[in-house]
Every structure is written in C-alpha cells, then in structure tokens.
Length: 384
Image (cartoon, rainbow, N blue to C red; front, side, top):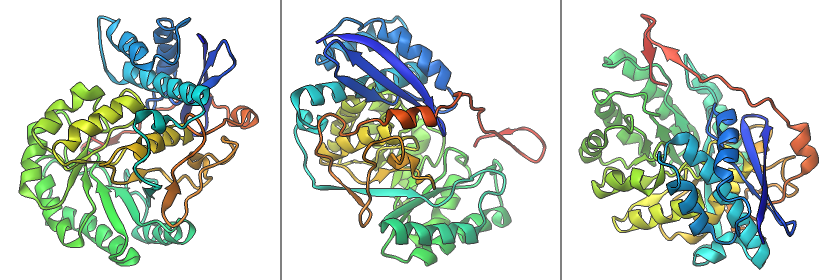
C-alpha cells in the first residue's frame, strides 16, 4: 500500500479536514488545523506531504520522523499542526487496514468509557456572556448530556495589576456557576494566559474555596519557572500544554513538575502517538492528561483513541457547539453520543469515524478567520 494524495477541505465553523488517499482505496482522515491559520496549514500539508508521497502509510513512526526531521527548521505551530493531521490520518489508515481501532495498536484500551467536559461560555472577551446566561447554559449542559465536568474562560482584558474591585466580578462569576451546578459537578476555569504573574496568585487564592477542578494556563506558557512558582503557591491543580509542540516542548514543563494536568492538543502537538509519548513522560511524575480540544469531530475522534489507552487520563474537552457539529452532527455518518457525561470507547477500525461527503460540501467554508484581539482602556494591546 502506498500514499497517493492529500486532499484538504475548509469546513464551517473553522475547521480543516484532511483526506489521505492510498492506492488500495483506503482513505484516512485527520484535522491539521491551527486556529485562524487554516490556509497556512493546508499549504503546509501539501509541502510536508510531498516527503511521504509513494511511501507505505503503515510505517507511521518512520514517516513521522521524516516529516519532522527532514527539514532544517523543526517544530512550530504550522509545521506541527500539519504533521499532526497527517499522523492522525495514517493511524486511521492503519486501523482500517488491520480492522482494529487505533488504540489497539498502542497497547489496547484501559477503560470502557471516556469522561467528557464542555464549555459554559462562548464569548470570553470584552464583557462576555452574562452570569445568568452562563448559569442557564450550565443547566442545559447538565440536562442534555448529564455532564459531570464543565469549564469556562476568564474574561479579557485583565489589567496587568488589578485591585479588589476589578477582581470581584471574576470571583462572583465562578461562585454563581458553582452554586448553579452544585458540588457534584466539577468546574474548571481557563485563565488562557490572560492573567499576569502579578495577578494570578491573587485570583487563584480567591477561587480556591470554590474548589476548581483545575486552573488552566494561569500565565503565559513561555516562562515555565513562572508556572512552577504559581503551582507551588496553591493547592489548586494547575493545567497547561495546549501551546506546546512535541515532546521536546513538554520536557521542561514535566521535569520541573510545573503542572499537575498536561493538555496536549492533538491537532498541534504532533498527533496521537506523540501525545501518547508525552502522557508516558507525565506518568512518571504522576501527572494526568486532559487533552485540549476546541476543534472539530476528527480532532475529537483522535483524542478518544488516545484517551482509551493511556492510564493517566483525566477528562476530555469538547467545545459544545450548539449545532452539535463538534460531535459530528452532519459531518460524520455516525455522530458521537454523550451518555451521562461519557462517550463509550469507540470500537470501529482506525479513528472509528466516516465522513459524510455531502455534509463536507454543505459545510464548505472559505477558511479565512481573523485573530481575536482585545485592548486595554488606553488602547494598548492586551493578551486574550
């Protein structure tokens, strides 16, 4: 069997879907997307893919090494996102060729179902959703899917050093959602790198009485020692990793034990097996894995294959788009189903999904998206 072609499709709301074709008609699917960089990723897939056209798609590790190491410049968000999507598709092909789920080729499943969490806020900048809107959405998540865990992102912008008055609404928001869902449902909060090292400890201390499941990216990920310092100051578990690429990007975070929860994004980190290696690195330090996934159903399918076979899995993110597109409604022939907050471990070969080509055409998009941005009151740029 040989790889013959790479096809990419821009899909609503902001996804890039990949098909890798072979000469025996087995097609693998992947999601090689970086948010707001879909066209760059599509071009990178074609450029990187030229290195493995005509090769045996079953030799995944060899092809990954070629894609990653054959260029003089390694890593980075565009290159790694392209490699990630291709790698997903290769596991899909291999699983289909052998008639087994991808996780069976990585040691086999260690659980029967996968705990999920979703978002209770879609707008996280310049005011965001009202507290009442968030509480109502939380109730809806509990009633429709029986979720046992939820998350939202802190609202930006947050001034470099804030006083009591500016901090108060952030605490009241978390407290209101906690009161709405009760103590039996876990609630995480994503600081999204929007909070400075001066503010993060204060906010974390104020949130601790409401028992966050974890606090995600309390500061920007470019200074691991800051993350270490914050982690040492609090009893709240710290999570990070969505903006790191490959196991080398995770090495310092893990060795310094800067977090308790690792969050590889399978669309960016290098794919399923790279995330499997990172999970094993974290397991040595008793870290747990909650894969980052704000994207589409192929990304979710890849995540579920990882979740099924790693012993240190914690919980799986999906965005909870109202139309249900992120669970594969319309795009997949058989969308994912959440029962009592869990998805059953997939049993079909490869990634366990099949694309509905009619929906692929119906959801076609131009692929162009602007970056979101926020400014402080004086007009200067803020982190969002």
